[in-house]
Image (cartoon, rainbow, N blue to C red; front, top):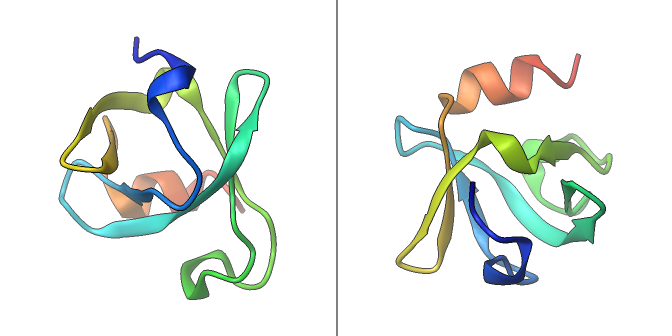
Length: 75
């Protein structure tokens, strides 16, 4: 599992397919809180569990799920 300290504010979050999921607002416990101003979030804060993070690479948080799978969990 990736250390929360590797994840920084304003990093892009991408799915395993490389598609945009959101933008990091901050870490809250064991979850990443995404900014609500990112168009992908639909105007709401969304959360991604840290266990879904595969790696932090090239300034992006890369998930083990596709963007669609991650966003489906929000509904």
